[in-house]
Figure 1 (cartoon, rainbow, N blue to C red):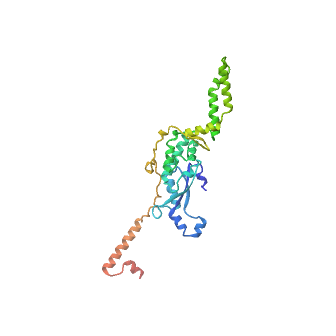
Figure 2: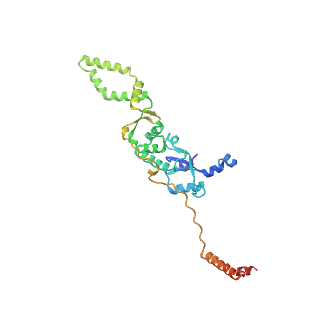
Figure 3: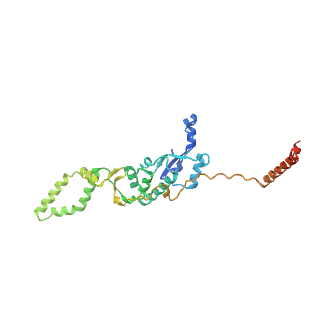
Length: 278
């Protein structure tokens, strides 16, 4: 489970130190306890936060250089199962930033519907491109073919109801007869069959968020083509601890000891420090 600090983030990823995980399998006790270097991390993130997480799990860029994302939690239904394990940190961060942009501009219902539909979701690159093409999707509040057919029939009644009413009150008996014929047809209207026909024609799909269709598919453009298109890279190994510098006194003592040693080697006599020991 992710920790409480990660709640509310578009994406949470479980980052594992793969070198330490490999050593775990050589230690049965650690394997039983699942005690190896891993941590949930929230995205979007910053370079400093990534460095802190990598430092905590022991990915230092020197002895341990490899990490692996093994699991996800997301704020978007169906997205978790679309995200690939072993993904790149910078690309996951880029997607999380794009999701925040989509949420502010459109809300997440349509994006969630696309994720559930499985369209344009074959890879992480595809998913990022969905966030760049939200104007190409349309979501309606219908959840079955029958509901969709009834919805469209109701819209038609609202639009043409006045026409039928005028026909019913027309002084022309033929027009009144036509109105009666239309009314009888309405009573036999098969909304489910009508809905199925339209779904097939529109290449739509029903999701938990509603009825999803693609509009102007010719305008769908792949703007993202890979890691080189990441706008704000955040991955960085932890900064190495600076090596302690010797003090001036340490340097003087070392220089004195070296000089005494060199002098004793030339004369064949022990240095003063050795005389003192004797």
